[in-house]
Structures are given as C-alpha cells and as structure tokens.
Length: 140
Image (tube, rainbow, N blue to C red):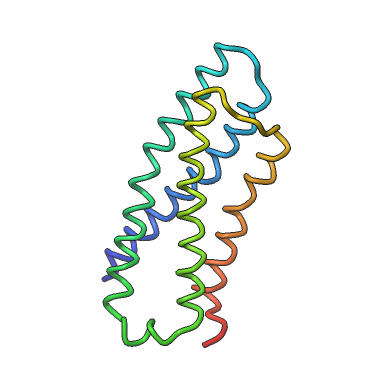
C-alpha cells in the first residue's frame, strides 16, 4: 500500500500543478486581444487540461484504493468525508476549467482578468482544506 500512497501523492501533486497553472493562463488570456497570443494561450490551455485530466482520474483511483484498504476505519471518520467533499468540489472546479478552455478557444469569454485572479485561488483553498483534513484529522 505504500506504493499506492506514493502514486496517489504524485498524481495529486501533478493534478494540483495544473489546477494552479491553468487558471493563471486564463488571467493572461482574458487580458489579450492579440490573435496570435489568443491562439498560443488557447493551445496551452487545451494541452494542459488534457495533460492534467488523467492526473485527476489517477488521484481518485489511487485514493479509492487507499480508502478501500482501510474502509472500516475511514467510513466512520468525519474528516474523511469532509475531504471527499472537498475533492468532489475540486473535480467540479476541474471540469469547469475544461468548460472555460472551450469558452476561450471559441472567443466567448465574458469575464475580465480580475475574475480569473480570484478564480485562481480556489484550488489553494481546496489544498489547504485537504491537507488539514488528512494531516490534522479534525472531527475524529
């Protein structure tokens, strides 16, 4: 199970790298009217999203294996269910980022860069919550 935990952490870290960087590209994309820059950023967004989506899925798979291995313990822990809720919200955030990739590619973005600066902070809050739930394990 230690190897599964290693792969879970590796995939989680890789997924979050994408969740941190993709909205940062949105910030820059929302600030440009230049066609060449638009094309470049749309390509970066698409490739990054396609790269980190499998990382998200593997994070979930390895996490599920870890949870299954000790289900008798985890299933009764409030912190675990709160962590799962945060992960579910992060999956929704990830999928919404995929929607935004398409919106930017079609030149249909209606929001300014300030919105995306705040939007960019959501995964930070998710990361903080997950780390607190996993390391501190409140509500046990």
